[in-house]
Length: 110
Image 1 (cartoon, rainbow, N blue to C red):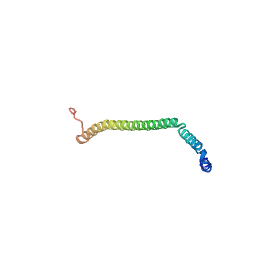
Image 2 (cartoon, rainbow, N blue to C red; image 1 turned 180 degrees about the horizontal axis):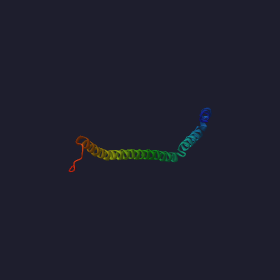
Image 3 (spheres, rainbow, N blue to C red; image 1 turned 180 degrees about the vertical axis):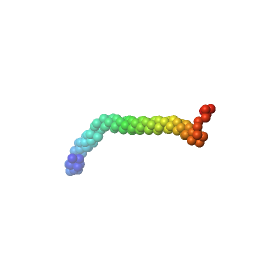
Image 4 (spheres, rainbow, N blue to C red; image 1 turned 30 degrees about the vertical axis):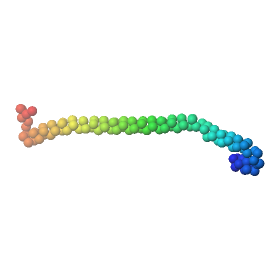
């Protein structure tokens, strides 16, 4: 379309040149308006998309922190139980060793 207008402007006499300049200016203004159409909404949508992605990433980080905390709690629970099992096992072992080595438990033994 613009190529035709430029060809017509070259082929016409010089008297219509100001009119052609006005037509080209109108086309340029129309192109600018077409480019600027809905640009503000596009920028707003892009900002919203960026905020949504950042919020999604933050939520994922928090989610995996919760997973890590759950694993940490389970490991801590297991270690706590093992401490009790070690204490009971050590007392049982002491009882068995003292029983088999000495043959009887002394009355004044702790």
